Image 1 (spheres, rainbow, N blue to C red):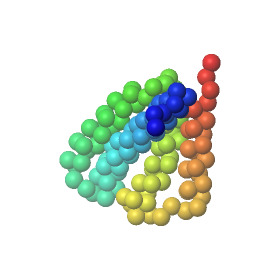
Image 2: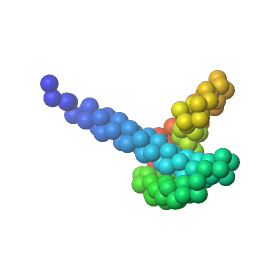
Image 3: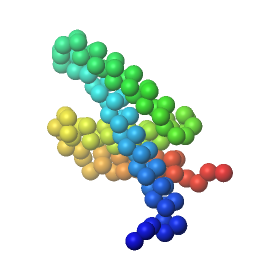
Image 4: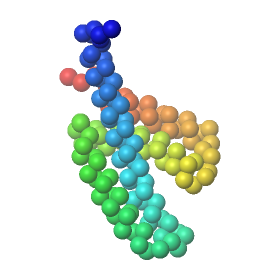
Length: 123
């Protein structure tokens, strides 16, 4: 059954939202890796060579921010909400610390703010 005309714009809109969210997640991971590796060097005495992939990751983070489809200020503001949620996921998956209920609630509030900023109607 072919898609009807009204469904196509909805599908395109959903794909755009998915692309933006995935781009935010990849951007956040690049930033967290770029900051976590120097933290390991300084706090845990890990090898200095980890600073090289950290620098590459931070450069990738800066480049990824340029791929977002809206004004830089709005992108940075909305990205902050995704960063918070990804950092809580990192805490659990990489550092092995289970997030508290308050961590999860805070991340959900941040994601709600991100959604308001990114997907509000514009003139």
